[in-house]
Structure formats: structure tokens, C-alpha cells
Amino acid sequence: MEYLLIVISAVFVNNIVLSQFLGICSFLGVSKKVETAVGMTGAVMFVLVLSTLATYLLMKSVLEPLGLEYLRTISFILVIAALVQMVEIALKKVSPPLYQALGIYLPLITTNCAVLGVAILTIQKDFNLLQGVLFAFSHALGFGLAMISFSGMREHLEYAEIPARMKGVPISLILAGLLSMAFMGFAGIGA
Amino acid sequence: MTHSENFTKGFFKENAVFVLLLGMCPTLGVTTTAFNGLGMGLATTFVLVMSNIVVALVKDLVPDKVRIPTFVVIIASFVAIVEMGLQAYIPFLYEQLGLFIPLIVVNCIILGRAESFASKNSVLPSMIDGLSMGLGFAMALTMLGTVREILGSGSVFGLSFVPQGATTILIFVMPPGAFIALGYLIAGINALQARARKPKPVAAKAPEPLPAN
Image (cartoon, rainbow over all chains, first blue to last red; front, side, top):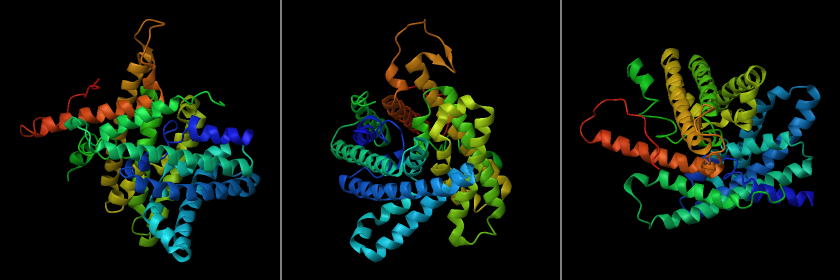
């Protein structure tokens, strides 16, 4: 039950993009087509879970025992950057098709605040390892849900008649606002 | 580019939020009030100026291949300083901004300026560049925060101007309002720029844009 609540809360109630404002850059940047949105979601899911696992272990087994909590931000960002590089190299070798699909999105992810944000949130919420990984995974699911539905709507937006000044970014932001309003309907479920 | 041109570009021509669309997460996340927007903007300005100075100082010592990781460590160090400083001296703001303080590290403006400006220029221009982009960012955040605070809670910088118990448009202090308010602000600025461009460049200073709703 507790685990189910983590999932529901992360995917719907506290959606990472639409109510916590993490990962907005990629949300607005690569959501012009459904195809690229799916690719980005895959890459984020992969890196988010791996980096949460790595940073959780780093925090619990190195930083906390040594009393170095103040190095959290610096060490986390380094671990994430190194991890993204390693994943990129490993994917290139092990699975070229997957690398082809995710490759261009991977370098972008280092500066995706969703990854660092979820890593820090996991520590702040005092989860155990399993809960933390589940927390990261469901946040990635929520990212995918928001990203893919948003890109679907943006594809339709291409054919709409929009006042000249609202074209491009402004109308996309308003669309995101409406989507976020729809997600507010989930507020209160499970708390 | 003269120093004054270098300084003014961050406010209008290359404003990080309105024109370059960088650093959107804190822009949308913390601007529920004008004060929070200003606080976040100034914290980011501090990190930006300091990291630009240090990057400009060490740029010749750093091998090209490890350039980006080095910059990230420099930025992260200053973010840790800001984080501890705020926690110690302005705990109220620290609570309000929360997660978005450590996330200054991944604000694309900072790494972007380090990579595209400070790593190619000397210390003084880099400092001015950081100040300009940072204050431009702070200005944008304060503007968005003011709009959201006026519409959402009927106050400016915490000073209420509506009678007690009056109904305000609450949606503007909630997440959807952030997207919508920024959307209209950018549309308004696009319109102003288009107007300024037509009859020959008039005055460089654009008037305060109004929310278009």
C-alpha cells in the first residue's frame, strides 16, 4: 500500500513537471514531436533510476558516515555527470540501436534538473533503497506521461490558427498551464 | 563590445528568461511571490558572477577535454556557499526556495555563460557579463513574481492592497498560473519588441510590459 501511494503520488498528484517544475527545459525543448518525446522519456527513465541508486548509495555509505553532508550538491552533480558519460559509452558498445535512439538525448540529461532534483528529494524524504528507486522510477513515469501527452497536443497545435504574438513559446506555455490544471484534479488523492 | 553594451544586453536583448528561454525551472517554480523571485534571482546572480570570475581566471590552466566538469565543480562550490549562507542568515528564504537552491547548479544560464563567455574573455568583461545576465534573470523573476502575486494574492512584496477576505485569482499562485502568466508575459514582450523594431530603433529602454490579460 505504501509503495502504491509512492507511485500514485509521484505520477499524478505531484507530477514532476507540471506541479514541481523540474525538467522544464527538456519538457519545452524536445516536445515538438511525439517520437522525440518518447526517446527523451526513455533516456530520462534510464538515467533517473540509475543516478538515484548511485547517489543514494553514495550518501548513505560515504557522505553520512563521514559527516560530509555539505558536499551533497557537488558530489551528486559529479556522480550524475560521470554516470551519464558511462551510460553513453556502455550503450554505444552494448546496444547500438538503443544508442541510436537515445544517444542525442543523453548529454542533455546532465543539466536536466529532474535528475538532480529527484536524487536530492529521495534523500530528503528519508526513503529506504527500494522506496527510493521506486520513487525515482515513478517520477520518470510521471515525466513521460506529461511529456508525451504534451507533445501530442503540440502536434495538433501546428494546425491551429494562433495570433502572431502568441505563436511558439507563449502558446506552448499556456497549453502546459492547461495541462497542469488538468493534473490539479488529482490533488488530494493519497496525499 | 563596450562595457556598457556588455552590461545592458542581459536585461533586454539577451534576457535569459524572456529571450533565450534558459533557466525555466526556477523561473516557474519559485515565483509565487515577488520576494521569492527577487531572492532566487539574486542568489543566481551571485553564483553567476563568482563562477564567471573564477572560470575566467583558470581558463588557461584547464585542458580542453575536462573543461565542462571543471566548470561544473566551480559552479557547484559556489552553490554550496549560497546554500549554507542562506540557511544561516536568511532561513525564511531558504525554506521558501527549498529544492531550487541546490538546483542552481543545473541552471543552464550559468554553465552557458561559463562556456560561451567567461572561457573566452578576461576577468573584468566576464564579471560584467555575469552581473548583466544575473540581474536580467532577477528582473524577469521579480516581474513574473509580481504579476503572480498581484493576481493570485492581491499584494506586492507582501503588502496587501485588497480588503481582507476579498477573492483573488488563486490559480495564479498555483502551478498552472506560472505557465500561463509566463506565456502572456513572453507574448507581451514579443509584441513590444516587434513594435520597437518597426519605426527604426527608438529608445533602447522598453516600457514595463503589462500582463496581457
